[in-house]
Length: 616
Image 1 (spheres, rainbow, N blue to C red):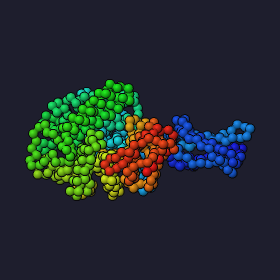
Image 2: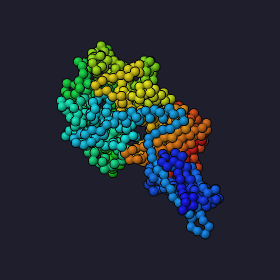
Image 3: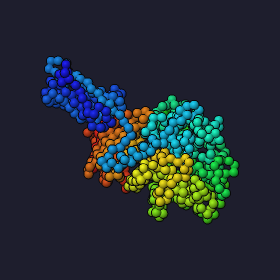
Image 4: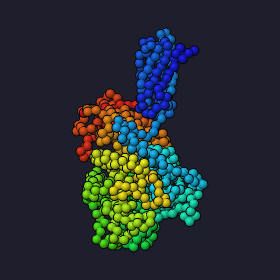
């Protein structure tokens, strides 16, 4: 029997992404004016689409926007036959997702592609204790050094599958007292003089790894793995909150050697110190407390998910405590202070309290700063940007410690740390990324777009590279040529999340994108139409939407593997909204202002493919 005689279903293309236009054609020579019903079922065997069209001249066709579970989708086609059972034919196509944006301007598309490639260039695999571990080559560290997994996961989780082994390698090397190493080397690392693991003067490692382990779990969703890891995570927190070298009981806060904010460079009046011991000059630093606040927030969520409300409640209490206590300790009315000194330290005439430090931007995105504080920090960055004329407001410190204090030697070989260099006042991309994220969250969208355009220009200028630090004129700089890499995950990650979670606005609320905050801010970038997808390769969870705006309307189609989405849609210059419809039905909504920006908020269930319309 020939195909036209038997009837056949064709799709164009055969493989597509969520919400792509897919053409389905049913060809059967007996079709001529009768109704034909198309049903689509996703890879989870859930029907999400049905439509009836009228056949003409031996064919029936339509264009659909696929959604639902990823994988092979089944097409069922039915058409009635007088006096007989309906005629049924089947077809299929495959739906695949990847984290991406596609806009009418193309600018943000190119930026995200550069950021993705940069993150992928950081990834490596090595053996630790005989087991293969995925890790990332961190900035100016040596290869096969699984250092600081707290810094890259937020962005990496949208592009790589293995989000477990780098954490397993760190916790497999945990000391009995709960302390974690900040360097773990691969088994065949070439230097026999370097210990397989060591700990320098970091203070935020245990809380930072706790936070990012939870971020990784949000993407892969393996609750059993989480149960196995949480006792180790809690042992690390117990260490940092009780060890007399790590915690100041008088002030109730994590302490550290006098360092350059969060960076692991300790020093006294006489010069640098690499390790924590009794000779250090200790300080309290806001970034440690804001990171602890974030860790407690995420651990409460994690324990709730595995059915332990008692531990979840414990961490909620700690989160509330450190939020209020930390803000009381560090907020100076404009920004967070650099340090509270526990030991005398002679800075001469230099006013350390005037320094704008790198962890101020992170305090915004960690939820440690409230809206008023966040706006103040952002505006202080802008003020100093204008006053200094520096290329970007990405400072590690502003200003850095003056050379005449003698803490660091300028041009002393590879590791130069004069004022305005490296962590002593140089420009760090990760600071800019966190500032950009904060600006998008707190009504400074136009500033954020400028920051995105700046980093885009840097990436294009430097052949897709993003280095650990830049000079104040915006030119790239290298501090460790023997370990140098063109791809620094600490810098790439926050810029990638700025695009995915804040500008495109797809942000997980819990694990596996089951609950999503969708806050598209495309008007800030001059975008009229966009297709955006956030995808976790470790679980194939995703959320996708198609966006289109006109003078008086914003429309979205959306789909995903989750359950619920909370929309928070930036209005394109309007101050009010007359109506919101969801799949053609009136929906309840609210209008809220954030500084000069106006958003419409509305909730919806994620079921197949749905449509949302916001009218002026």
